[in-house]
Image (cartoon, rainbow, N blue to C red; front, side, top):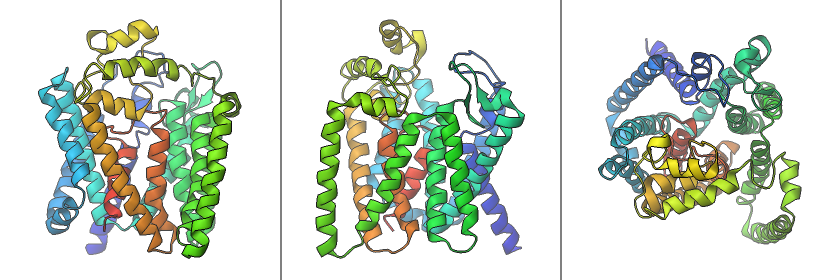
Length: 404
């Protein structure tokens, strides 16, 4: 009976990770709608599934209440940020949206707490490998056998999106998938070929999605993986190597600053990053109108009926987020929210370095890898503090794991 219960719990965890990945359901229920299509669909099934996940997660946390309380005591800044999202209903420009979004964020963060308190880093990576293995296989099935869903045709030329609603969604998830399979293949000797196959197929899907920024992020993170291992060297070798790498990085930064077109053309982007750099000054203007606590969590982007109407009017197009995680957080919770997040993130990042220094396996580099991915991807995407988001859930999990 114990083995059956353990198997059922692992099955619940994998299915929950799949749900939080945003895969399958939305693209199917929307009928394979494109980016520019306005489609209304019944999302009650998705809400029911999330409610069940919330309930089961809470039960599992209560059953291990001592362990749960121990982990809850480990990250003051993380929980302060979550509390701030809930309290922001007081000043929110759209209180009903703030209530709904903050409820979902807190519950999905509880799953991150459960994931960290229930499983070791090695176990977390293996469960994530199951999740992304399913996503990779189904993405090929959707694109080849069900192109209405798996291929995005409203971007000038067909691009693969697999089981996601947009090609960039596939690209971003394949960055995480690639690194998970890479770490497992690098560290594991038994049946390592399976993980290298997963890594290769993830890379292939990333290339087929034509997500240039995701490809650049992956290259940087793979380099970071080997750079983080330098942190384990003896000090007489580590310090000179890190100084040399810092000098090379600084030189490369100055060169790219003076030749930005080289970088943009290499990832298939223009100098405006597909209109992002023209959008960001408008977003910053709106942040400075309510700089300290923002517009409330989820209270800004309310179409023509909300404060976002100004940006829509001036920009000439209708974005639903600022395409930058830090600006999105600034709109939601102001400089206070940004400050709380950055303090918590920096403390977790330093803890990640201490964790790597005191360990020997590739599994223990995973927290630094994911936090680096968040820092990079938030420059062009807005899912930094997004409810029911796998990226945020894994941040909660790794930030708690390194504090053990």
